[in-house]
Image (cartoon, rainbow, N blue to C red; front, side, top):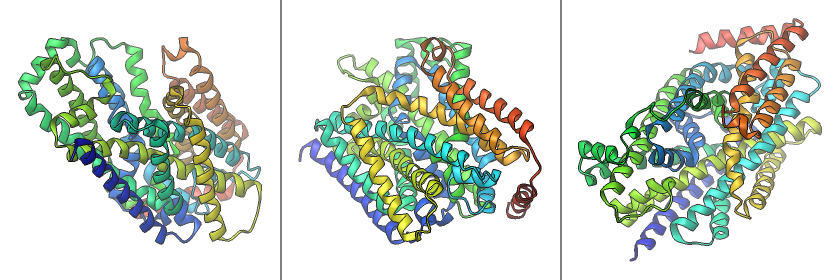
Length: 494
């Protein structure tokens, strides 16, 4: 058999496994809470790895290794910022959000939690946050579909649109039928595949380049500054990179996992598993890039067309085609895990936060689950239409959307969990102000080239929310009772 056939077999087996998991989750989904939040039944390992896989996307296997291959270790500051942000998110947000969302009328989405937490009878807060999620994630999903189409184009020479359809059909299929459980279980498996691939590639490749000392010497021969964390980096550049970590507090597709874990007690185990996975995976991505620099220095006749494919290239060089196919499946896993997570959150925003808020109907759970599935389908079709022209500019929306969610939701989530005096008006004004600042700053090259837009967005949102809340605060006994109850439950269950 040819190498491409072996690789294709690996990809087909991977996709078949994802569809099977979707079918298994479908059989366990009976109501809206099951479909949107998995019945709050996730264990720590599934919670941790599914959150990590949903978070990292193709950036972990493509973007980060490519950046380090081009510029060296100064590009690692984003990874340091993300790891720090992820840890703080697990430590400060996960346990409180798990308890508080259950206390506040068993909220199953971030917008519904904010409405229930702040007793907003106007529904404006829920609708505004639902719209932000719907708009940003539709483009986010589209960017993932673009990446999937390009994956099949670059890996197998398939037409971009054929690859786009294959990825879309599989990921939409298991998300549409299996809901949150399917997304979480598939993300868990995809997280394992990504982890094993990122460890295996650099460990084996370093033997090809002659061992660690020879590898380091080859890197220095290309550019001695590549092994320095600070040479070539600017203070504002480092601050902007580390500030990516602020985005975690406001990412709906990540923090929704905290709401779905079985108990507060298990958030500690999940945190340890998740951060260990993240650190080792990031180290594997960095090591892959560094070994790649050494390999191409030692083999000047070899050519790398795109630095972002260094992980794929090394996998094809050093492994049997079947194993190389599993390396390709790891890239596909990174892309698909993020698409599915964003689809289920977008579906919940459309049905739970917009449809139910605007049309006060008494539909049954089965009807709402059906509507949730239709929402997945509709959002997917719109995302496919946006992705069809293979417009690379869509991919630029990923960092912009990360900043948008971090700037609009991050401070609100933190204040809702830790400050009794937060008000609905404060949250609404702060959310809108943060989103506007990110939108304006991110579209002015002179500004965004100096400082990442999440920093001014986060600060403005925090300040506006704080001062408007102080100006509009009135004591509400029910809010006080729920806040105290959440703290008591947190102490009891920790």
